[in-house]
Length: 296
Ligand code: PHE
Ligand code: CO
Image (cartoon, rainbow, N blue to C red; front, side, top):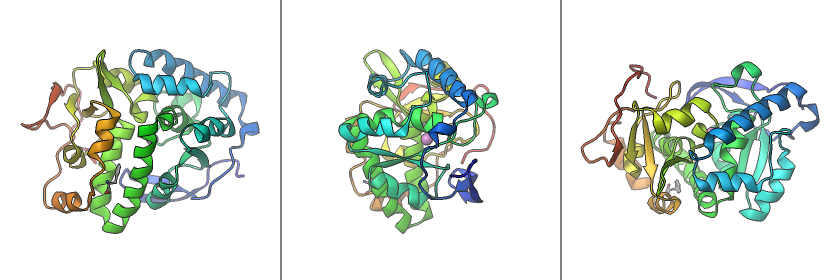
């Protein structure tokens, strides 16, 4: 084990220039987490659990509770894996950070979810540009216990391997689907809109902003609509897409995407903040405070 993450090189990916780490699976160096690192976990865990009651969807909150994690200490991947394997057959593997896309897809296609072993510094509680243990573990792991979502994630991985073989444009379309569902998705419930996206649940500011702020659009999910839409990597999203159920998301993504990729290659992308004529509008954003430019 290295004492700190090993960056291999900076690469241009769909998320801009980001550090890409060694592809190796690493063992979680649990005994070497410091009191300060457990403290960062405790602070973030307490804060988000409170904030997410009434904001995150039931599937997220209830499944997270099944892991028996708490603010006491950074969870051990081995403990979580016992629950996951018994639940849906998923397994966490420790990694140094963001992986090359094909490696990531291959893990997902085998029901392995890569989790960054290191946690952010105390001065990064509110924002960190790259995924750390808190985002990956607190944000992504709970829904892996939901049978439909678990299946969706595996099929996404299989679709990723396929898209990788088709070409970079197909990958961009597929990555937008991940971004607007797995990372930044909202779900409509009888009680109102709720969060299921991991990028939101692991962020204090965006957990509130995505539901309560007048600026962003909240639009009904549509497969091609999402696959055409650019997104933000350095600000809160300008648009959130709302699913009615995980079944809807699953069913919509079952068809072969090959003809969709071909069709989308011939049409323009949609800006992150746009509302189109045939959108189902839950909320039309005021756009206040939006940065110009910078859509990925
Ligand atoms: N159906 C997609 C394809 O043919 C794969 C996929 C399934 C993608 C589920 C996302 C989620 O490529
Ligand atoms: Co993530």
